[in-house]
Amino acid sequence: MNGILLNYIHWNLNPEILPGLLPVRWYGLLFMSGFVFGYYIIQGMYKREGKDLAALDNLSLYVGLGTILGARLGHCLFYEPEYYLSNPQQILYIWQGGLASHGAVVGILLSTYLYGRRYPQTDFWFVTDRLVVVIALAGSLIRLGNLANSEIIGLPASVPWAFVFVRLGDGIPRHPSQLYESIYYMICFVMLYQIYWKTNKAQQKGFLLGLFMVMIFGFRYVIEFWKENQVPMEEGFAINLGQMLSIPVVVIGLILMLRSQSSVTS
Image (cartoon, rainbow, N blue to C red):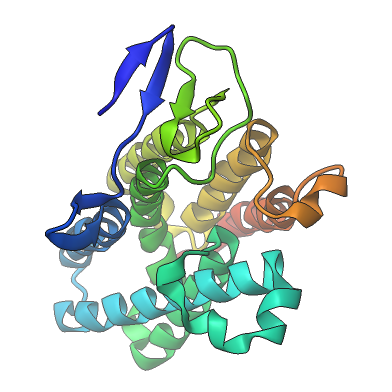
């Protein structure tokens, strides 16, 4: 299915795991894997800090809904508002694709705020400073899902590791930007995981959340220079929507890191 020809990697993975037998896609499997792995990692954190494990299942529900609703609404309102406001029923058709990471961040922050109001012992800062560790892992897996779908492609490239996405039919070698992001997000996950377990930074309210915002969305700003625009209206912009939305997230992240120096989680 995938082979190297003329120094380029010809990528032709079928998005379905068992085509013709079971309509399960690699993207869906990798997306859900992020939640499964994340659950067990957060469970270890809850045990370490003596928190109520019974509340963890509800956290998964809050975060799951916040992620999907936020990512979907983010895509619809940030990238194609005219179409979706004219066809609001299409917003519900999540299976047709269209999720935005910036919207997911908003959805997750809102859902964890609501969760913290219900479970005061695990307030907003406690949850988000631990949740971002596994969100970085989930982001890495999701980008592998994008690679499986041959979507969110990179710009044309002549580097030896360029991918020719056979399913697109244009024969153009491109930067495997999905792979770049996946590798970087995995590195972020390892760093955040080590910081949580080996330092006291998790006790400084907002530090890990701020660091996550700076690392993830700072890189998101940079990597966009090697990616195709996602919607036609971006063609006339000096920087695309992903970069525009990343700038305030990075600024907020820096503020949170500075603020955290005087705040300690109880």
